[in-house]
Image 1 (cartoon, rainbow, N blue to C red):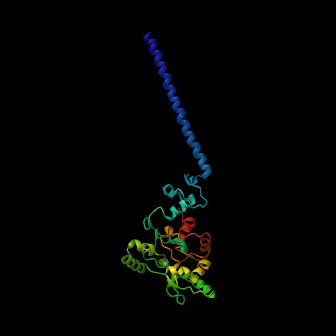
Image 2: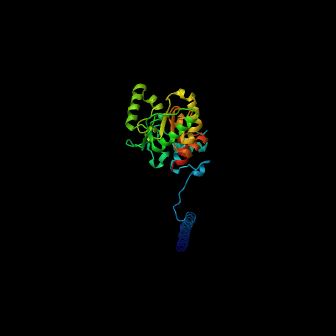
Image 3: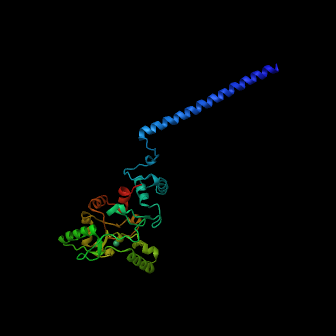
Length: 288
Ligand SMILES: [Zn+2]
């Protein structure tokens, strides 16, 4: 009787072990073949290029300025600003607005040519000096060669309309900006100085593409020259760089006198869309 039970027990154990081995073999094989199937599908779709998982679909966006490496920042910024559209979230994070000004500084990408960005997130090299020409007869000072050519054309066109437009501050070197900024800091304190004067290396005047015209004063906004520039400067490739109401984007108080050369095509788009240069850059130029 005891032997018989032992035999039955052994049989049951053997059958169970065989079942388990079969089950695992089938399970592992199917898993392996599934992986292979997936691999083949990916290869067919992507022509054997690696598959990148992208979270772009999670956002409802019109512009194609989504940058996957900014994904975590988009999510964090969206949590803080749930009243903003996804387009705004992506553009503002691309600008860098999820960081305080002058934190997270990057070097200006000089390959952007006339579309380089220089602001409170992008800094020029200390020794960067553009190809400069004189603005003699147009207020004096210097500007970058192509920007100067267009500035003179703009000034000539204004003259024909009975308006005088001239440069009062064009190119400024890194050292000039250092002295200027330090002077403002000692007189007004650093936080006040930061609202109207650029820290060295972040002044658009060092690019040679910027000009302060006629009068560096708030009252310039009420002159006929200002009105003319607002309606015509884009035709010559210049934009009002620090507009009213956009201080939180540009980092500067409204400067009716400061214009920046970006080329005629881009200036036209910025004029029509009524956006800042930061928004333009973050939407159309910045690469991930
Ligand atoms: Zn200026």
